[in-house]
Length: 130
Length: 130
DNA sequence: GTCATATTCTTGACTTATTCAAGATTGTGG
DNA sequence: CCACAATCTTGAATAAGTCAAGAATATGAC
Image (cartoon, rainbow over the protein chains, first blue to last red):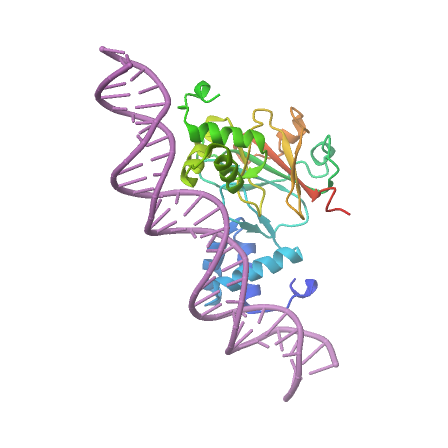
C-alpha cells in the first residue's frame, strides 16, 4: 500500500498503518501506544509525520469531531460518515447518504467549489442512553 | 436574551454575545479582541467561560471544522450547515437540508439515539478557486 | 435602597496536542 | 554498493484551552 502511493517503506510507516487498520477511530496517542507495543520504540514525532503523510496520500482519513482530538481510520474512498456519542465520545461508521444527491448538494453554495460533504451525527450510544 | 435563559447579565457576557453576533464564525481569539475593543479589559478566561455558558444555554453554537480552532456563531435553532474553504479556511452558511429527511436519517444507527446531523461541505471559496 | 450570597470574573499557573528545527539515519534508484 | 533525498530522532517550543483560588458583583429578599 505504501509503495502504491510512492511512500518509502519504513518501520514507523508500516507500524502506524497497521495500527490504524487495527484500531479504527483511534487518536494519535492510542496509535503511538499501539505502534510501540508491536514495533518497539518510535518517536511521537515520527507518528505525527507518518499520519500526515498517510493522510495526504489518501491511505488514511483524519476525522475530528468538535471537542475531540484528531482521530484516524483506514476506511477511505467511500465517503462514509460517523455517529458520535455526546456522552462517551464513542464513534461508529454510518454508510448513509453515499451518492444520495440531497446530502451532497446544498441550496446555495456561495460560489464555493465543493468537493466533499462530511456528515457527523450526534447522539447517545447504546451504553450511554440507558 | 441572557435573562431569558436564566444567565446573569454581566459586562463580559453582553460583550461576548454581541461580539459573536457581529462576527459570525469568529474564533475565540478574535472574539477576545472584539470584546476588548468595545468593552475594555476582559480576561480571556472570562471569555472562555462565557462562551461555554452561552453554548450550554443555546444562545450560540460552537463549530469546529477539522484543522480549525473553535468558532462560534449566533445563528442557532435552524440547524443550518457550513461550507469551509480548504485553502483559506473561510466559512459560509448553507441553508440546505433543513427538515429534509434524507440527511437526518442514516441507514444504520448502530443503536445510537441521534439528535443532530451536522454537515460540513469542503471545497474552495470564490477567491481561492482562481 | 441595602444586604447576603451564590455566581461570575480575574489572575496566573498548568496541561495537552501538536508543530518546529537540527542533525543522524536509512530506503531506494542507479 | 553508493549517494542522496527522504525520513526519523531528539528536544524544545507553541497554541488552545483548562484548573484553581481569591476578589468582585448581579440578584432576590428584606
